[in-house]
Image 1 (tube, helix red, strand yellow):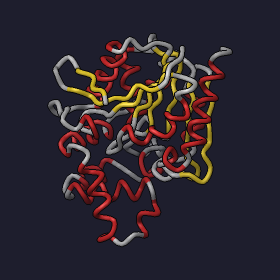
Image 2 (tube, one colour; image 1 turned 135 degrees about the horizontal axis):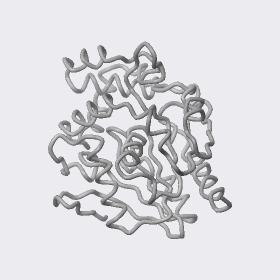
Image 3 (spheres, one colour; image 1 turned 30 degrees about the horizontal axis):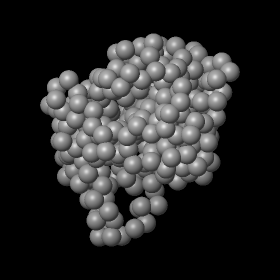
Image 4 (cartoon, one colour; image 1 turned 180 degrees about the horizontal axis):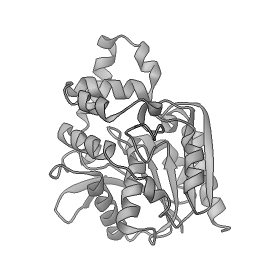
Length: 277
């Protein structure tokens, strides 16, 4: 068990697994923890140094609350971690909110510390409008929906998100679903979750795609749940560096949990292909 101490004294839980010339930093999503990467990291640590950690307010970093943390805050945390652990030859991988951290890191710090990027099932803009239909809930979530959610109790908001990410949960009676979902929320700080949700949903990171200066791989779910598979085409059109899309068939937003072996294999493929660039 290791903790990285930030400049403000707060601590982030992290695990440093494996060794090698390449480093893979794998960042989890909203209400998730580093645990989603434990199995893939076990398979990947033979090929690279794997850093998995909990964002502030999540899991082992639950007590790192800050004051109304934003997506920029998480990017600043990432930068401190990279510098503090003297990480190099970095493949920066973010799933869901973790991909949002990637966008913010690039916007704030550029790509000079990075070797390549893996984005996993995430849109650069969550709120849909008349000209953008590749946001949350496959184009159905708007600013009006976000404003209506603000009047809901937090558990109901989270349950709707969880069912959206994994539709089969919608078939489970509410009284049976409540306990496991409450257990997930208990691992997180509610105030941090609320603050990050607002920050994440109100950002438009589309311009960042054209600012990336290293190769990009996009992992996506098909048929998907939260986001449309068509996002792969959007990234291909707007990323100006070498780009590859990897489809996870018959998967939802929880593709890492559903197919940990395939996920690890595809990350390994990205690492090996970069050796020949």
